[in-house]
Image 1 (tube, helix red, strand yellow):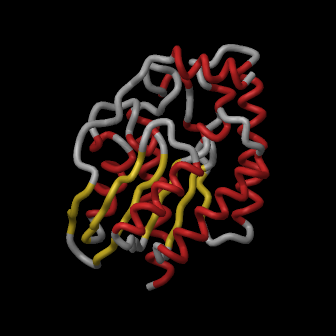
Image 2 (image 1 turned 180 degrees about the vertical axis):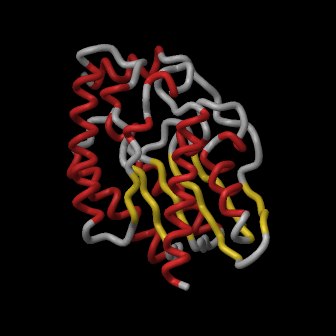
Image 3 (image 1 turned 90 degrees about the vertical axis):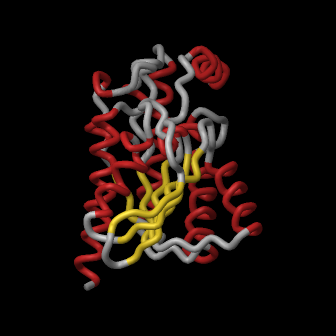
Length: 226
């Protein structure tokens, strides 16, 4: 199955990461710093411009309430271990310090031989690094999308990866009961017709919904802490 999964990744149309700025500052009001971190979905694959992607949706929504200093660190194909290594390297080069971190990871882990429990340990390591070393005060993770509904995946691989996603999300949900992060789940919004042309990545409407969910989560915490 993992060999078949690699073949699917190889044969799926390669869409580019969204073009546009990956660091910036906008808005007015109380100052907040934001890091968007992760894989191809965080990088905006599936849309042409970053303003249509997660980074654009979140920063635009927050700029109505805050002065936002933001950065996007994301790469297509990245898994949790690779992202953590990249993050540690950048932190060693120049100390990272963000108020809010939004993470998109898991699909490439599901496509690898790693077990759900091993992935949970890697996720916990990432959470601890972000909250301790990076000093993140609000950490938002998103559940692994329901790959059992991805149009690009043939059966029985689609069924197999769908079950893997369920196992990974069960581990992440359990971790969320004790670890300091908020877990988002909007799998119901991932209808096949709303996905990108490759049948594997989010389309514009999914990015909009995802980004608005992130903004609402951030604003809710800000309102309750005032």
